[in-house]
Amino acid sequence: MPAPPAQPKDFSTALWQNFSFVFCLLFGIALILNTHPLGDGAWFWYAKAVRGGARLYADMHLVLQPLFILQTKSNMLLFGEGWLVSKIPALLEMIVFLVGLRWIARYLLIPDWQKGLLLTCTFSLGTLFVAYRFDDYHVLADCMSVFSIILVLHLKAGTGSKVNDFGIPLSLGILSGLAITTRLNDGMALILTIVFIVLVTLTRKRVISIVLILFAAVLTLFIVVSLTGDTVHDYALNSVFQAAGSKGGLFSVLRAPLLFPLKTAKRLLITPAYLINLAAVVVLIASIHFVLFHRRVSNGKGSLARVAYALIPMLFAAWFVIRFMGTEDPAVALCGACMLLGLALSAFVFMRAIQVAVGSRPLSTWSPTELLILIPVGQLLSASMSSGGAFHGLFTPVGLFLLLLPLAFPVSLQNSWLRTAFIVCLSVMIASTISFKVLVPFSWHSYVEGPMFTGRQWIKHPLYGPMFVERRPLQFVQAVCRAIQTDGARPELLSLPYPYANYFCGVTPWHGYIQTFFDTVGGKTIEQLGDQLNTAPPRWILYQRQVGVIELHERIYHGGQAIPHRYLDQQIMSKLSSGDWHSTLEWDSESDPKYWNEWFHAHWILIRTDK
Image (tube, rainbow, N blue to C red):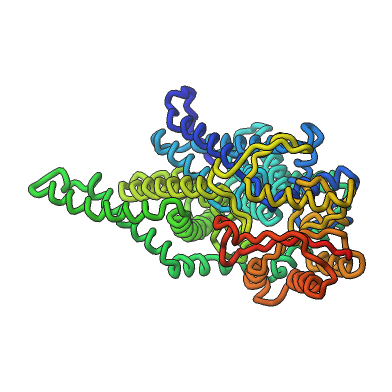
């Protein structure tokens, strides 16, 4: 890999990059403060369980990776269990993510204002997915990818430096191991991509570098698993071999990347809002290019008329794009198009690299920096394994892909057409993303956060100190706490599918059932829960009924076949209709327009199981 360009030492030459960094930092802090849905509490209770001696895999049969839970546990040990201090890792990881993006941006051979624009776009696209949050494991995995890219940039052959020959491969392996224990599919894609890049680009110590990468990754994996107290067998059985079951099985997971391009193209073509926005952006690009760069505009008779003719479609296109501001549609449509472009470019780069490796293409006609785009595209394909092949939500790799484009293909962006298209697309995606996230800081199925800093209040929780929460959910969960407090100091409460009521009320989840969501819990766990509810249920159950979400997961991951959660829903509703169990408190999300969604409608029921 060639040496990266020298970085400027004078920060006055990086004014726009610095401005972008500060803006993204403040925007990220706002997102952290305004994200507190009724689906929270799972990471808190997993960390508490580990602190109490429970094993994530042997005892709780967790199908997720352990690193984020261990991080949450460490934060509790250092700073306590307060709500504000629980956001410390989120703030630090957001800063690390931004520093990594800023680091990469300084290598780009483009003007400072374009670097700032690109940095803002990359960061904002990372947050575009409605469920993206900085106090979750996604940003942790993204940090591993960003700093792997930086290390690959410094991986040069023939220097004789021990740091380069040994330190960088070991560091790449450690990052890959940490990525695997954060998100298995993303980590595996990262290490496979890095090994391929090393195999193609290094001319000396190639084998030893790959061995060091694999050794460090495996050692890191073993160390992280050992910190959970579980055996490698229990870890692998639950979070590797059984994890695919909740996503429809191994075959369904592996075929998702193959279906991904077709599903993406199909979705872009059948969604009117996406088509309108794509067409409007194309017209906008053509009009701006004509006005700014076409030579005939400034030369010859009638140039003013030609400018006027170009301004008309430009204004109409801008009006269409602005009309959709406040929604994610412009950014999502452009992201989908960028995904298809990234897949095509990565296939082209992969084939060129193979030709170089086998000697059919001379090195002088190829730049190994092209291989950098394989890292975000690999992350994109791995993320599609979790989405069933759907492209919506897989936006962080798109941001990294766009950030690396000027570095991987610096000559191409010198073309005025491509430069105009690049800048217009970046600007539209930034405007769409920021305006949308201000209105909807977080959304995950029926968990929807309202506009930033509206409908919220600061409270002082007796257990967690200051908290910034929305009023409507707060009123509901406080009513739940008052109801179960009739049992005294040690009430029994099972909260399905997430344990927020257990968290807010300070009640340990019944029998260790921390969360039972539809694609993160194995079928055997749900069947076992159903058996226990039949024989000896807890006194209180807070059940969030989400029939639409169940149907969605059945359709995406299981070919429309019923999942165990559907039978659990039928069991609970049968107990209520028969009078064996009683509803004592209900809250329908339809009562608040912000929470209403025809597909993701949720009905909350506080159930008392005794007479």
